[in-house]
Image (cartoon, rainbow, N blue to C red):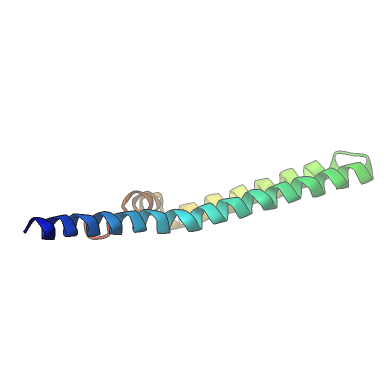
Length: 96
């Protein structure tokens, strides 16, 4: 009986661990790709600013970032904030 309880506890722990890891890996990959893309855009803005000898490159980059923030805000509003919070907080699908 004790071995069965221990085996059940191990399997529940393993399931929870795999749920956490499987949700974190794709998010971390997306974050790394976004940071890499933003660094690339900063280099493009620096090159554009040096080639035109103005701050036009950084103004272009500011406009691009602002547009991305606005689009992201509207996408969040469309999904609903309660849905976003509940999907990030609840890891055990049997309880939620």
